[in-house]
Length: 205
Image (cartoon, rainbow, N blue to C red; front, top):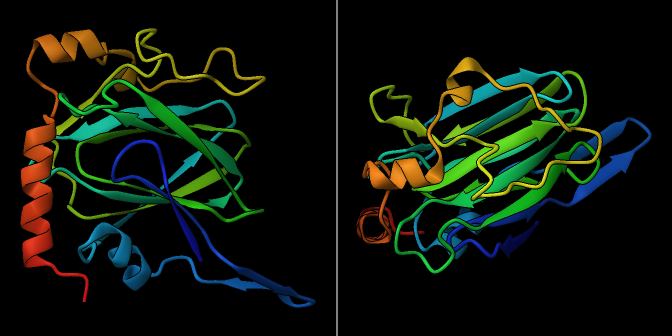
């Protein structure tokens, strides 16, 4: 398994070794010990979520208040999706920047996002099934979003998806500037304090 840090601090791309044969294939989807070595703490993944999307559906940009927010480990169980990692941490050197990773059933990659970082994706095929392992259960009072088509963020849509399908909630989400002005975004300092707390209470071994 190869774990590669992304340009957004604390986020990683995970590429497993896939072992195919005439019966099918086998691979390790998640290795908490290897990820812990990179993070400096054991990721306490306590809930698994699954979404199924038609081609052209866009979900996000979603994040949660810090603390505790919600770190996420995302992979595609079927179909394919372009996954976006968006730095929403005010004070971060990469604030407002994003990076994308293709998640599909060919390379079987996954993405890990730390607390305070925004997440979105676009489904590239019908019946695209995404699985999210998360470190906190759903708390509607602390869940937030940024409009995924905010031009100030400028997520680059995949070829052939010019008008993605959004949920009513995502359509009504504020822009990055509006969320910043309203004091709704996490700060780098709050995320760093939470990260240090997690490293102290959940060592990697």
